[in-house]
Each structure stands twice: as structure tokens, then as C-alpha cells.
Amino acid sequence: MTNVTVIGTQWGDEGKGKIVDWLSIRADLVARFQGGHNAGHTIVLDQKVFKLSLLPSGIIRKKLSIIGNGVVIDPWALIKEIETIKKQGLKITTKILKISSKASLILPYHQKLDELRENAKGNNKIGTTGRGIGPAYEDKIGRRSIRVCDLYDTESRKIQLKTAITHHNTILKGLNKKPIQVAYINKILNKIAPILKPYITNTMDLIISANRSGKNVLFEGAQGTMLDIDHGTYPYVTSSNTVASQAATGSGIGPALIHNVLGITKAYTTRVGNGPFPTEQNNNTGELLGKIGHEFGVVTGRKRRCGWLDAVMVSYAIKLSGVNGIALTKLDVLDTFKEIKICIGYKLNNKIIKTVPETYTEMNKVKPVYEVLKGWQSSTQNCKKITDLPANAKKYIKQIEKLIECPISMISTSPEREDTILVKDPFKQVN
Ligand code: IMP
Image (cartoon, rainbow, N blue to C red; front, side):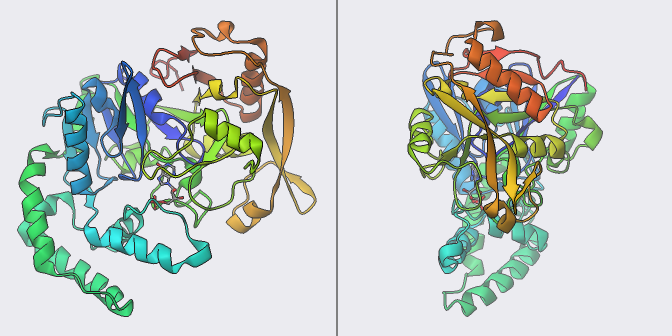
């Protein structure tokens, strides 16, 4: 039995959905362990496009799919997503979707607060997805979350709601906004509870017993390392830990069960929302990367900022998550470029550094140092083996491996699942 954890090594949108979908054939169970419906995973199956936010990507392959305790769940968004996927012809039954009773809920006041906070920030906006993710995680840490189990545990719900509403109404009063009515929240929770109840269970036990009976688990990370609450470009981050160790906490397993970690790295870099981005190309190159790569957010539709691959950043992500293999995605987006750049260091205060600065203010000041490689200017799509790739594409890959000191296990050259080159199976890789 082997478990694989998939994480993003950049600012999210690395193409995790396709890789998780591809790997889920080899997995018996797919589990989400952090984030919420701020995530957007696109999966193309038989030319049908599925856009997932909260549902684990394994659902498309009818794999047992788990929403772990580390996820924040907007129950209305989840039900809507289930309905949308059902309309696309996929059955989502209580046999294949399981929700942790310990996950925290996103309620309407979290979304409202997210919006109010962002509006109040003026030029310093984080550029959140506006889904209430931050306020919901704040309530979790503040011990006033309404959790999934509170949908039917009325005793605990009563106490939690009192604490949460007292807290939020104090804030709303200060902002001259209408208070939240407990009766209203109770009413909407009562309505949603019976719909979700059949999916709710002890997901920790499910995962552990699956492992004990020799089954493979795929842990599906959302967002990316540079959006991690501790290690990302704070405060321009999301409100959860996006690194691999969160797979343990966010699903209830011990860290020794995180066997292999596959880091997903896009062949260039993108970012949605505000915050530092050293290799950003605010020019024709950036426009071209965005156009060829269809770089628009799945969740908000926002245009993504685009730039060259940053090997300093990817190396940092590899260290943070103990990544032992990389899936390089969207290589085909670079097919037409004459020259391709890789950031190999940063210039800060007249010194060259090879590490990610600890503060966003310093990260804003760094100037990338590039290595320039020749493009291959031919198509990489339909390449089934690494040897099929154009010579300069192979050189690009070799150079990345050298710079990040980690092997590339998979290469993706189009959104279609068959356009994937497997170098080393992450389920078979030995740590
Ligand atoms: P939040 O997670 O909605 O609070 O947003 C915080 C930051 O994370 C913003 O810059 C968002 O654009 C970014 N973000 C959140 N989820 C994703 C994602 O799935 N992909 C890329 N960026 C994300």
C-alpha cells in the first residue's frame, strides 16, 4: 500500500486536477484535506469539462472521495456542485462521497465578512476569492465554528451558535451593519442538515482502515505552497496550510502515512490575487502565456498574472513538503516561445540570494536573475515518452531538475488525460 499526497509548488492553479484525476486510477480513495470552494480543479474527460471546487477530483472516476476535517465547507455551495456534476451525467451517491463530521462550515456571515474586510482594505486588498474562507478558518481557530456534526447535534450547535453570533454581531455593530439573527441561521441549517446527513461520517477511520486493508490513498491538496498561511507570501496567502504535512492533520492520519509527495509545478508561473510575484511578466510575454495557457481563474474567472518559472520558489516548496517527485504541467504552453527563462536566484540589496525572503516586503524588492534557454518551437502534444519530446524541451526539463534538485516524475502536455508522460509512477516511487 502506498499513499501519495499531491500539492502545488507555486501559487495554485498548477493543474493539480488533471494529475489527481490521472493518478486516481491507481488510488482506492481520494481525500481533500484543506481549503474550501476557493479551489478550482478542471478535469477533462472524453472532451467533457468538469469544474470542481469542493468535491475531490477522484469523484469523476467514481473513487471513494473524502472531504476531510481540514476542509471548510459551504454546504450550499457543496450541494450546488453535486447537482451540477449530476447534471453532467455523473452519479454522486452516499457510497462514494463521504464528509468528515469534524469539518468546519462556511456560513453566509463568513462570506459577508470576507467582502466587508476586502472592501475596507483599499489598496492593500488580498484579492481573496470572496468565498468566506478566511473568516471561516478564523472561527475554527477561535473555537466558535459551527461544524458539520453541529448540523444534527443540536446541543453543541446551540452553544457554538451563541458564541459565534455574539462575536460576529459585535463586529457587525462596529461596522454599522445589521446583526445576524440566530433563528435565521438555525432555520437554514435545519433545512440543509437532512440533505447532507447521509454523506457524513468518521472519515479518519475510513482512511485508516482502507490503508490497513492495503488500499492506496491519494491526498489532494488545493491552492499552492506560496499561498500557505505559515510559509507563503504572508499576508497575501489563503487561510490554511497548503503544504504536504497538512494532509495528516487535515484528514486524521499520522505523518508517517504520508509516503510520497508529488509536487505539481507549472512550466511557467501564475498568480491570482495580489501580492509579490518576482518573475511576473507585465508585458507581451505575460499576455501570451495567459492567452495560450487560458489563464483565467476557475472559481472567480479573474485573469491570472503570468511569468517565468521560478526555480528558487519551487526549491523552497520542495523542501517544505518533502516533495520526492514533480509533475511538470502545461509544458505545451511554451511550445511557440523562441526563448524561455528560468529564475535561478534573486538580487536583493546588491546581493544574489538563492532563498525565498521571509517577508513579502523583501519579496517585493527582489529582482529575478534569469538563465535563458532556447525554445523548441514545435508541438509537445501527443508525445507519449520523454524521448519523443523535442531536444530543447528535454534540455529545459533537465535544467529544471538540476536547479530544483528533484526528479520530474510526470509531464503533462495538454488538458487531456492521455497527453501525460509518465517517468516514474508516484505510487511506486520509493522514498
Ligand atoms: P482566499 O483563499 O479566498 O481567502 O484568497 C486568498 C488568496 O489565495 C487570494 O490571492 C486568492 O486569489 C488565492 N487563492 C485561493 N484559492 C486559490 C486557488 O485555488 N488557486 C489560486 N489562488 C487561490
